[in-house]
Image 1: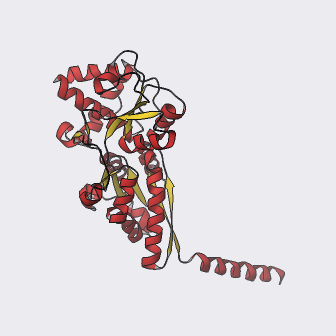
Image 2 (image 1 turned 180 degrees about the horizontal axis):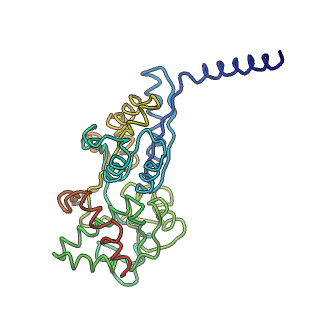
Image 3 (image 1 turned 135 degrees about the horizontal axis):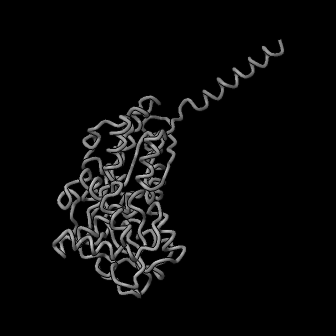
Length: 331
């Protein structure tokens, strides 16, 4: 009888707790390093929106790290409902290796499932003591350059491609572009695994003369550490960086949150979602919203026009033993 009473009490507790959480749903957004502040505010906005629309509570959990590292975590079993990563290739890899994401994921949302853009700029110490003006200056002797590891960081891959695109256009040959990149990476004392780690190395730990940075991360450095300590230098030309998003459909469907996950990503394209992106220095796709933010004019080239897209780039430049490995080992 005693055991039966205990069972009745435990069953009642289970029913009670189930009723408490019946209207609460959780999502996991697996993202890359510099989006922490963006998604902290965006998640709060979406939670309010969903409560008003559906009368239910949603809790969005975040995971952050280097984009390539995050993609591998999902491939290895991290149960993301959505991924918001630094580049399309990382989502393609999840789709290719797990089938959790459909192969045509890029067509599911506007602008090839990239709701905002960014670019690559330089952060220097106040007064710009090394006189950094453009990409050539990063290859000069005596200049210490901070950039993360392209093998784990999506931002670092954009950095590399921005530098190479500049060199190809200025020097006119693959051989001369590679020589420029070897000189640049001779000036890199350490490769952190992600962009936020490199921010810490440069801004907090005081290493390096110049940080090759996401534009949004550069402005956050100025705001967090002080405009009297750092300043931004915009290069003459840079790359159009397009961070990508996708629903991890099979995981979200199994958990019963696929429709909610789709709504979550679509909310990035709303006026409120676009304003939050602009507030954290990502360039909104909505031209009217973008006009509210004073982004500098920088000549930008796309990965498609300069390099033919991520598939060829990943194999030829960032694959094991490919161009980056060769350059870094011979710097």
